[in-house]
Image: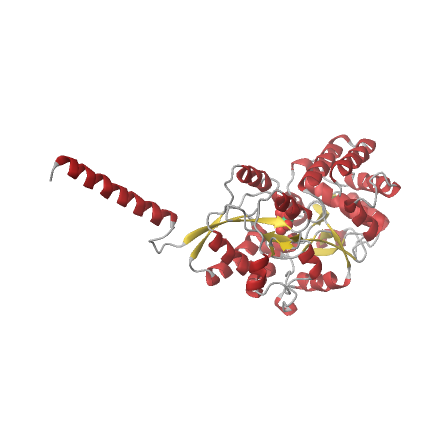
Length: 419
Ligand code: GAL
């Protein structure tokens, strides 16, 4: 062979080898290796991870051609994950799917043109009638539906350490804010932290619960659509009540994630904590069974809801794999595998109630019978910009205690972001 021909053969051969290697490592074809599906969440530990694991096992059954790749970024409420996600989306490097809250938060991604329309998949997979209409409305913009809901969570729940409560003479959870203050006094007299609290977004959750108590379901909902003004006297009263509640909380709250506050309950160092019902699953996963739960005092028959859903980002590397994940998320088996471990209730309306732990059985009944209001801390009520502004206002108030400045900041945030 002449030397120039030998060189040509060598170059072509090497190129072919490189191409084959590239194909098999990316799984793009010519190989039987399962293609990766990167699933981006903030469910990295405890009950949240247990829920995700349930979904992953259903995905393994349904989608053998694809491989789950865990893109979780730890941190409650996505405090860290959302920042990582925003920068990846800005760099056109989306994961194959990510979790997004139904409602205003999802609308942010739709308006930014970052996620795909799934209307056809809803038809193909028979999902159009699988979920409650109100929830579908929260996933729809301009007649197109953009995500598959995995669950419904409840935000306005207080969790208690039963032994501590009994020791302080508290035999039933308070039904009004005034009765709650009296119980917090009893816990304080016992030398424990009456109410465990964490950083900014957990403070926003507590404040939202107080707003529900003081304003009622309808006026509370009006805060997010502009029909209730943030300079309302009811909001001023809520700030006063919230200020009083803060005086019963741990001083290091601003450094705490929700699981740190939860640990105070588990360790018998705090009586109560306000948190969403992922706490039920987390306490179960951590084998702590001595807990009580009730709607936040004064919230009466109001169910503050949020829903985790999954999307198909524009430019996802493996859209077919993502679709298989989404189909699993929306399936009866997927919802059962996930929600029995996550503390949430299924978004699907055809679930078998008896399949669920006692907490979720009660929540399924409440979801059907109670007034539903959305959550800003978890994206059903407000955009990410509005949420960010409120989180920083709460964090600032936690440090400086300036009630007038807090209400001014709330009014300003609503002026900039409320619909
Ligand atoms: C919420 C999410 C829940 C739970 C919680 C705490 O935003 O919807 O599923 O993960 O954060 O991290």
